[in-house]
Length: 289
Image 1 (cartoon, one colour):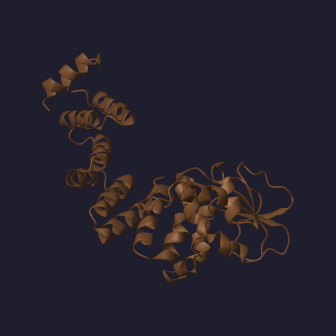
Image 2 (cartoon, helix red, strand yellow):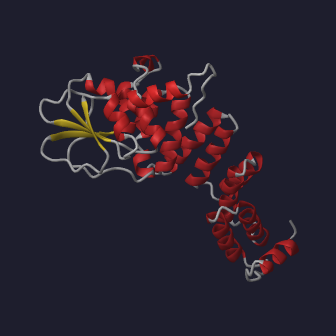
């Protein structure tokens, strides 16, 4: 798209004309377009900023991110590499380049980028989480689950409970609080570990954090008290743990995944029979959720 075309679009949409020599305004427009999900126009704005100022590392970084979301991986990779030439110590650029390389299937190179991002900024939670997800993809569960704890910082989902984090032991007194995090599908996936939690002998209460899941989990795990609200622990709660931290305790190796009792969810008995009767006409049944 030519600069004239971009200017005509801006005028037609009541966007003030921006002189091509003003890179900061083009960059700001790119951020606004990106926030609205208008990625084509965001990319054009960042490119305009770079035309006016070729060493504008921040605009180049945001352009690289947009290109990655658009699936233009080679172009995104080139832009991240340019950022690192302009700003060799830019941890977010290493993290972004690692994400592109991971999307390309170049996992070893991606891992080195994530590691370098962490070296440059040891408190860079996004890079730690990227590293953990790649380690899990590669089957390194020991390190992957440990670094996966950074998700609580990235997602700002940690709860300020005063009780200690549970480490898998049988509680001598009091109850264990399990609490839900992430989406419905994630909660259902992590629920496969609940039977192993109860086998430790610790009495449990589960805050599933989603009313839709409360009856399903209550049917499926009768040994656990299930609530669907933010649980305010009283003196009977001795320890707590988020659902997403359970794999770190019970899935340290690929072989340990065989310990999942399947199926572990119990359908509503009356509704199950109702649907079986309704569609018992010999045709195959397919369920979509």
